[in-house]
Length: 341
Image (cartoon, rainbow, N blue to C red; front, top):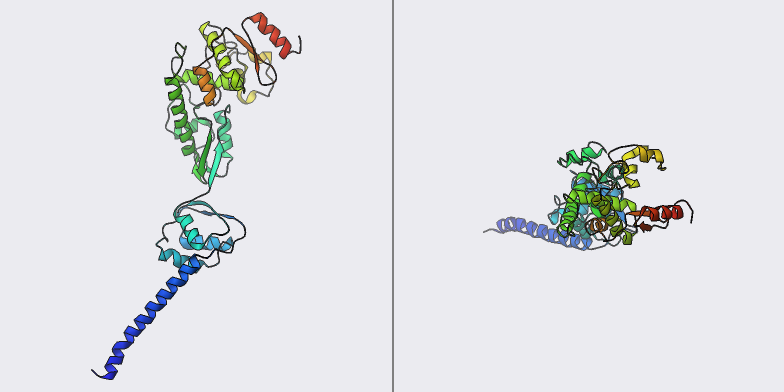
């Protein structure tokens, strides 16, 4: 073999070796760069929308000052097989993060977790209005009407079409863009679980036909008092009145029935105007819950305090005065409501 031939054969080998060495050098360089913290002094929030490409996300990072090395970041993502591994959502990038840490963040979907509270005692209409105004949540219902929610969740409830009282008050975690129907579906299932468990362990000989009746009474307890120690006592008063065929005469039921017409001042005319939620004019429970009851109120409705009280009145300090007779009750009203003695 001639020297010229040997040199011709050696040239590709040399070029390959040089290319391989360059590749190894690039690989090592990227490794060092990927382990070096980015130049960031304050935490930054950014969003990866559905359908975004890695290049678009890298450009967003550059615009927000997270990193200006978008080409290197793209190369590193390709090197690690993460180009297609991004997950949509809102992310928080903290100072000290490395490019590899950044790629881990978005490929593992470690999105920012938000929280929303479903409050004890609020109505479904109020809850939906509040959630519709929350820009973190995707309000995927046709509108804010409660029936839209029932339709969206595929629930047919002729007795309670607004699903009043059906969502468990608690703090719920979600990521930005979470659908409100999914969030409320969780709250609905949680209420079903809590109510079923409480119903299974209920006291004996209660005058309820089904768990829904207990939920209705629990909502009255929720609206009548914010004091934990009075819940079971108030539930006992209501249940004794039901057993004795006495009207419940609960102001919150009348207020609920008035809806938007209630201006904060409950009058004698309101109490004397008949309606399905007026427990001054009608016997028995109102047709649906009047608010979202807490776990404590549900427990009170299913474990009422035994006693002889048939009346109660607010003392003005969050507690209630209980009476066994109308005469005692009228004295309590004069003392605590009318300023008498």
